Length: 375
Ligand code: ADP
Ligand code: MG
Image 1 (tube, helix red, strand yellow):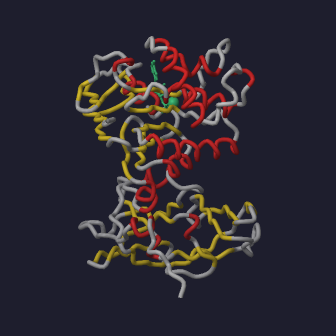
Image 2 (spheres, rainbow, N blue to C red; image 1 turned 90 degrees about the vertical axis):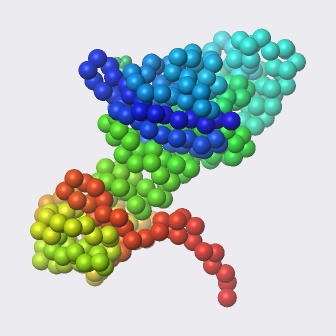
Image 3 (spheres, rainbow, N blue to C red; image 1 turned 180 degrees about the vertical axis):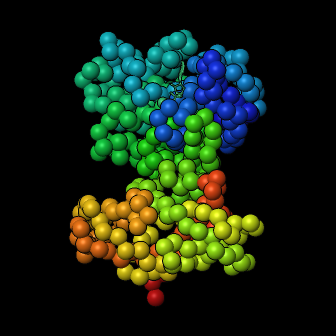
C-alpha cells in the first residue's frame, strides 16, 4: 500500500512561509505530478514527505500513520534526485545494491533483486561498469534502480529528467510511464515541465507561491482551469487574455464586449457582474483564421513556421500580447493584418479576482472521445 495524506501541512523558514496549509490525498498507485514555477515550494514539499526537511505544522500520513517524527528510512519511501547522486567508485551493480547491503540482505537475494531490476531498466549489460562510463539517461536509470530495489510504498522524484537532453527526456518519460504501470506503485513526481506533467500524471497538483492553485486530471486542468494562474500555466503557447466588459447575464450565459463587439459565452452566470471588467481567455490553438463569433484583427510582428503548425505573435488593439497557433503552413505574413476568429464555446471567463466562471462542457468527453467506427 502507498496512500499519502497531507493535512494542513505548513513550512516556514524564519518568517518566510514557503508552504501554506497544504491539503492533499493521494491514492494507492496514483501517479501525482507537482508542477509550478521555480521557487513555488515543490522540492520543499517533496523533501518534507521524504523526511529530509522538518514540518512547521500539520500532519503527513502514510497509509494512515502519522510519519512527521519518523526518520526517512522508516517511512517506506524512496527518492530520486535530479543530480543522480551515484557513487562514482562503485559499479552499477553495487550502486543499485547499496540500500540492500545497508539492510544486510543475504548475498544471493541481493544478486537476484539487482539483476531483476537491471532487466526492467535495460541495465543488465552494464552491471559491471562504473557510472562514469554511462550516458546521462543510463545514470538516471541506475538511480531509479536503486529506488526500485527497496520496494518503497511511495516513490518520490524531484525533476529527475531535467539534466537530460530533449530527445532522451522524451524517451525516459515514456519509460517512467511504463515503469509506473508495471510496478503499480504510488509515485509523486516534481517538475516545472508541463509536458511531463500532462503526459505522465493521473492527477496534477499546480502549486503557486506555496498554495495549491488546483488539483485535477491533466485534461481537466486544460479545459477547466479554476483560476487565471492555472489557465496561464497549463498550455503552451500560453492562453491569451482579453480585458472585456460584462454587458449581460442570462441563464444561457454571460455576454461580454470587447472593442465594440459582443459575444455570449456558455458559462454559468453569477449575479452582480454586469458593468465589471472581466478577463476572457482563449487558447492560441483555438483561434481560427477568418471570422468567428467574435473577430479580432491584429498585425503579427513575428511568425514561426514549424511545418506542423504556424505560430503568429501580435498585440491586441488594447496592447496585451496575443498569439495564434495555426495548423500547417498558414497564409499569414509579418506586418500584414490578420483576422482571427474566436468561437464562444472555446472561451474561458474569469472575474476580477481571477476566479473562473464554470464552463458548460465535460472535459471527460475530450479526454476519451467515443470510438469512431468506420461506416
Ligand atoms: P521549487 O522546488 O518549487 O523550485 P523550493 O521548494 O526549492 O522551490 O523552494 C521554495 C522556497 O523556499 C524558495 O523561495 C526558496 O528560496 C525557499 N527555501 C528553500 N530552502 C530554504 C532554506 N533552507 N532556507 C530558506 N529558504 C529556503
Ligand atoms: Mg525544486
